[in-house]
Image (cartoon, rainbow, N blue to C red; front, side, top):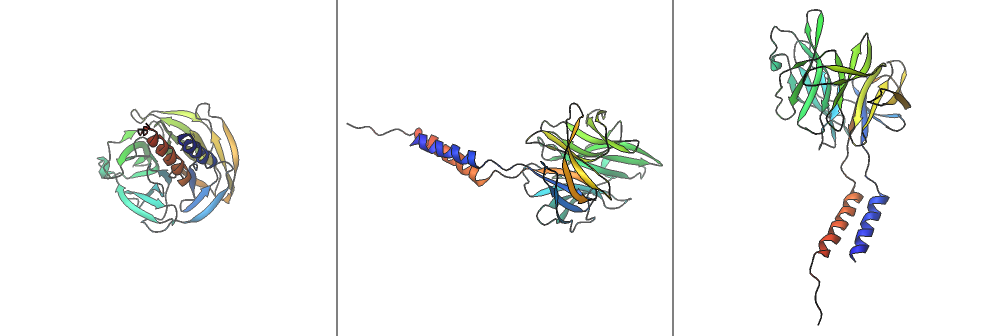
Length: 287
């Protein structure tokens, strides 16, 4: 009986493999789309609704939250940067808290603008923000970590170059889009020292790691053209086109959302556990 139960459990989990991570993006700054990660085609879900700004510069997913994404936007030039949660089903935006220059201990009234957000899959309560503090007519690139539950911010770290979009791989390594001479390439970021090393050149618009597969995807495009989805090798910097986005405009943010395990997978694991549990019981003796 035990062998039969285990065989059934394995058959169920084999016939119904767990669903992969869903890829979402922002067309422009305010239209949520879902993208086929294998072929690139995008489906428009709707405009962001509610919240203070109805837009986001970047997206990230929080481990354990299977229905929402997190975004960063600017609520005013003099005010703070709005960190929000976006419901992927309704596109409703819920504002969580702001991060301003005063929150970071920066004095002098110089505003801070953040354009990148990424949540480390190994530290789900921490969000990494990248942007710059505006000093007169120049920008001082910086990185800061904030607590998603309390809004408390750590001391900012100055970066060696301006970084916009950011993403973590499954090991917690941080990558971002580096802005050099008006073109955005990919760089690897040391969050302690602030140094940024180049990985790949090319006019990318957004990047995101699929932490379940280790694949790094990116978008290219322009406001009046149909963009493409690409895969980038984070070691060599080489890229390969996966397909056309299929919608006009730039996809300026990407994030993978990992769903809960499917019911068939849970059922299979449950049957296997039941069989193992029964096997440990003492068998009745016969005279």
